[in-house]
Image 1 (cartoon, rainbow, N blue to C red):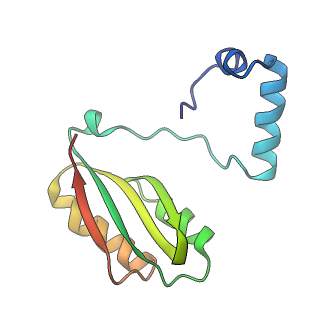
Image 2 (image 1 turned 30 degrees about the vertical axis):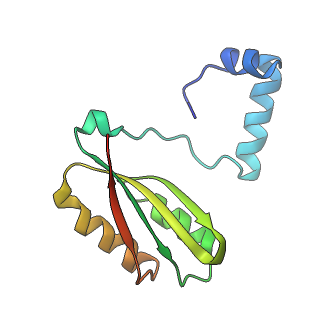
Length: 121
C-alpha cells in the first residue's frame, strides 16, 4: 500500500528484522511477485476525477491484459473477477478524458460491454 515505507517501519509492523524484510522483498522481486515500484499521483493532486470501468474481456491472456491496462498513465489498479470480468480504476484530469480512457480499455482488451462510472472524491 505504501511503496515508500522504510524497511525499518515494515520490519516493525511485521515483527521481522530489517534484513529479513530486505531479503524477502528482493526475492519477491526476483520471482516476479513484485514487478515494479511506481509512483502515481492521486486524484487530489491532479484536481481530477476517479473512475471505475468494468466489463467482460474476450482476452485469452488475462495476465497480459492486466499488464497492458496497467501501463496506461491513468490506471491505478486492475482487478479480475470470474468469467474474465475486469475492473479498472483510473485517475482522470477532467471528465473530458473519460471517453478516450474508456475507448483505450475497450479496444485494448476487446471489452465491448464496458460500463464506466465516476467516483465521488
